[in-house]
Length: 368
Ligand SMILES: CC(C)(COP(=O)(O)OP(=O)(O)OC[C@H]1O[C@@H](n2cnc3c(N)ncnc32)[C@H](O)[C@@H]1OP(=O)(O)O)[C@@H](O)C(=O)NCCC(=O)NCCS
Image (cartoon, rainbow, N blue to C red; front, side, top):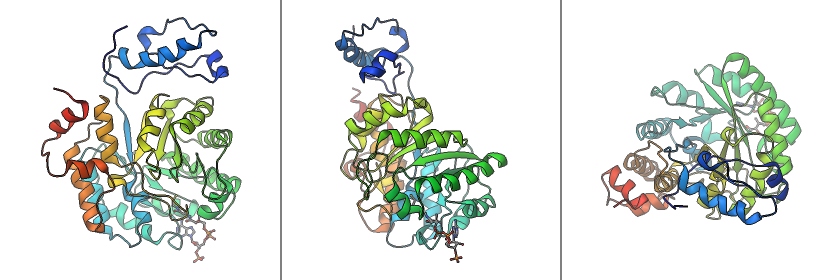
């Protein structure tokens, strides 16, 4: 078997026997006739390697940018509306196609997001770009609806402790409230995305059972969500815990309907993502300049930085259609405003060395 460059995301095939044995394998289409003898476990590990050397299509990955919402909600000072809007414009100019732009939560809870209406009404929308907003309840939904929105995100917690802190109610009560929102949105023809928070651990309850997360994920799909984003809100996950979670989740849905949302608190964001890509994940959430966190999740730090994600993906041969030079500029714009260095290592490392996107891509993939 020839080994050529890795391609992500691989097509995933999970066989019944292997589900039972806890082994998942990734087999590209053109070798899916490989016989898997349940007794020869090494075959499964061996075929996982083959994922990297047979797919001929240039794979794509959908990036869902959360910096303008998840990022700025966690800043200690209020970021003025015109700065938020300019950041969103810069992200769109860099080629980001999904930009979560505001939230319509209670201003008593998150004052930093209290200008959702102004942001959404004054934004110059680029055709082909999706500008979803975060919605906690019907009150927020009704306000957002007046702003010409096309997509909302609802966000039940995966743990009781965090649900109480973030939504002031139990997980079950939260799901009931979000169902009311989703029902209305579906009726109105507005797309609904679901988040589950604290999927790999809660600051209050500790480790969370993957089965609990799978059940909530299923409920979100039954409400009409087109996609569910699994959020490691406090960034405690590892490639190992992501694998355990994914095994449970792909038993209730297909990986192309899932997104992964990693905070990089323990520096595990990219390796966690790699574990998710092996399951065929097609969407990743990230935040410009690594901004982010949740004011109600003790210890939550910034998200996986979009600059780091894009560099990583180009290195894997995944075409994101994002211009890294412009993306780095967007990251510096908001970091300068906040008077702190970008939390993205790629942004810092590139410095002013590269003016040309193509040169960065060549370096990421080591293309001579
Ligand atoms: C869900 C949530 C609204 C529940 O809070 P609560 O205090 O139990 O909500 P209540 O329904 O009792 O409302 C309290 C007040 O907030 C107002 N309010 C509630 N939802 C609102 C919304 N979506 N938009 C604006 N105001 C809202 C109510 O009108 C009420 O105002 P009043 O005191 O002047 O009458 C609140 O916990 C919340 O906004 N959480 C989101 C947290 C967040 O954004 N975290 C980061 C994302 S992960």
